[in-house]
Structures are given as C-alpha cells and as structure tokens.
Length: 475
Ligand code: ADP
Image (cartoon, rainbow, N blue to C red; front, side, top):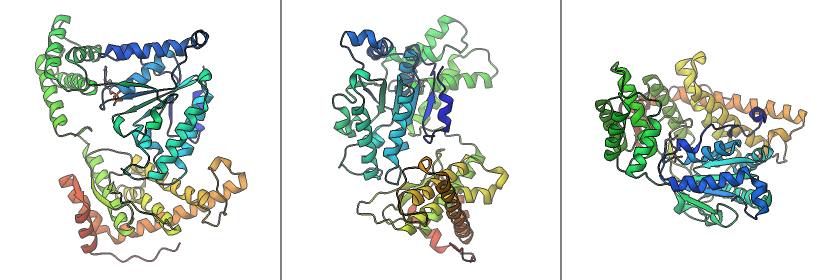
C-alpha cells in the first residue's frame, strides 16, 4: 500500500491525507439522486481505461454546494472510500494568509502531493474562502493573496489533461453565489451538485443511519420514534439529526437506562433546537479551564492589537464563545493601499506571540496547551516570511520560495536569524503584556462574564488602565 505516512515530512502540514476514508455511500442517507450521480463518477474512477475506450472521462472537478452540515464532506469521503483512493483534504481558509505568495505555493504543494499518489482525490472545503469573485468586495480581506491562490487552482486544474485526469478535485461551499465564475467553467468544476436540506423521508433515513449503533427497545419502537422525530425536525441538517441521536444516547446513559426512549429523544431535540436558535454551531459547553485560557488569549491579543494597531485592519470585537485554533479576534477590513514596512512585519511577529506568552505567564511552562503551539507556529511563519521572502533582512536580498530550497549553510543562517527575531518578539511581547497587565486582567474578567467585548471598550480599558513600567527590550 502507498506510504502516505511520508507526507508527514512534507512542508504542507496543513494537508491531511487519509489512505482509506472508510466512508461509503451507505453512510449518506436521503437525496438518493446525489448518490446516483456520484456513483457514476466512482465507476469511471475505478475502471478508468474501460471508460476511456468509450470516450467517457471523469470530470476534473465536482462542486458540492449547500448549507453546512448537509453531508458534503461525508460525500467527498465516500467517493474516495468507494473508489479506494487516497483523500487529500484542505480548507479554503488554509490558503488565505496575510502574506503574499503563501496561498499559491500551498495550492501547488497540495496538488503536487495528490499527484504523487494519483489516482487520488483532493477535497477543498469552504472553497469560497479562496475562490470568491475577483474584483468584488474584499470580504475578510487578503484580496490580492486570495487571487493568487485562486489563479493557482485554475492553473493546476487546467494543467492536467482530461485523458490523464488522475486527480479528482472536489470542492464544497455554502456560497455558490460568490464563487468566481472562472472556477465553474468547463474543464474545471463542471459538475455542480446541490446538497440541500433533507426532506422528511430523508430525515428518517438519516436518523436510521445514525441509530445503527444505538440501542432501542425493539425494532418497531425504533421505527416509530424515529418517524416522529423526522416529522418534528423540518429544516434540520444531517449533522443536527446526528447530534440529536448522540445527545439522546448520552442522556440515556446518564439516566442509567438500557434503551433510548421517547423522553430522551424529545429532550435531545429540545436541546438541539436551543442551540439551533441561538445560531451557535459550536458546543456551548466549553470547559471552564479552556474558557479561562481562551479569555486570556483573547485579552492578550487585544492588548497587543492596541499596542501595535494595524491601520488597514482595525479589530472590531472578540469573544470566547467558540474554540478555534486561531484567536477569535474579529477584524474589519478597510480598503486602500497597504505599505507594509519592515517594522510592520516585525510587529506582526510580536503580535503572533501573544497567546504563547500569556499562557506561559498565567499557567506555567509545563502547563501549556495547543493555544501556545498554534501561536508559536504562527509567529515562526511570520519570521520565516520576513527573512526568506522580503529581502529586508541581513539574510540577503534574494527571494526564497521556501525553507527546503535552502542549502545547508543558508538554512543554518536562517535558523539563527529566525531565533533572533523570535527571541526579540517574545521578549517584546512579554514586556508589553507586563506593562499592560491590568488591562489584560480587566478584559479577561469581562470576557469571562459576558463572553464578548467590543473594540471601543477594549480601547477604553487599554488607555485608562494603570501601566507598570518595563525596561526597554533591545532589538
Ligand atoms: P458539510 O460538509 O456539508 O458541512 P458534513 O459532511 O461535515 O457536512 O456533515 C457532518 C456530519 O453530519 C456527517 O459526518 C454525518 O455524520 C452527518 N450527516 C450530514 N448529512 C448526512 C446525511 N445525508 N446522511 C447521513 N449523515 C449525515
């Protein structure tokens, strides 16, 4: 079997590759016509040559669109599972970085990896993050960067000839309306399939799939109960239906019962509706300790954002209502030319250190969690970018595509310089957070109490909180 393990060494660490997804079309219920269409693609993928002789080729790209939680990812995995092909998954947001050049090279890496294991499947979830209309309003910012990434996807998809289409690209989005039409042209994502909300029959079928490994009093009772739930769940997605059954299972165990009953199902439904109505997708029950860590992270990021304000990217608010690997801070984009100076790049390294520095300060170096790991990764990426791709440092004036292109003595030089920047960034960040320690504490308290805080309030606290003078940090 293929040695997908070696991908772990790849620079493209954000790509997750699975040799066998283990998912089949049986796992997807309702909307049978979707499966029928995709089944045909699987048949072509499996008997490539036989179909080629008849002049039938596999589409290069399949676009699945519809609301979140309707099973698009599941379908993509099922195609890979049914065809027995390796599955390379990425998210459109992975390609959207603030630094120019990164998106395109990540797209290249993704396709290069998939080709190395072809025939294979690439899945790009939330493809709208990178594939939105060019020249349109710059929602979320990073317009130029995204455009480079999008162009690279188009180049890659045009690059392989239909007759040797060994890589099937599956995209998923809930914003078909904002996709760049170039993506939908022939020879690219020319098979577009809508994955909608399930009908009542569909909901019943989905519930049955997720009840497979659950205990009911009898087969008849199970049918009756699931029928009733299917009736009560108009506008629910597959993911929400799955949640209901899981929740019912948990309630059943908590009550020490042997079988899921009507009470548990209805209670689970009520809970699911509750979260549904508040529009919260994430679990509302974030453990207390994590909440505290998230609050400190956001407070530290907020203080650094005040200390090194970004003129072109003012922050709007932050919250601790969801667990994300990146800070939850929301930024507003304002258009206009950005003249990024060397100091801006350095400040961005300092800012990126904030989650790591505050976590060590508050929880101790032996008690760090992924919040810190993510921040370190982020800060190092910024430092590497400054050194390798801007020509602004003592490293040299050339542009280096990436780390692996460096000969050993240059690599050593890079590492020394990067460590130097990281040392400065960590010290500077720590000094700012100590100086504004009271502001950090105040913002943390408000976040823990209210879950959210707006930019104006953060600015007020930042400006009025007493500061603790710190010795200067030498660059
Ligand atoms: P999307 O990619 O559209 O946001 P996902 O594929 O991530 O949705 O769906 C999340 C989960 O919800 C799936 O892993 C599956 O367990 C369940 N699910 C969603 N739709 C269906 C369906 N039609 N049949 C069975 N399970 C479903």
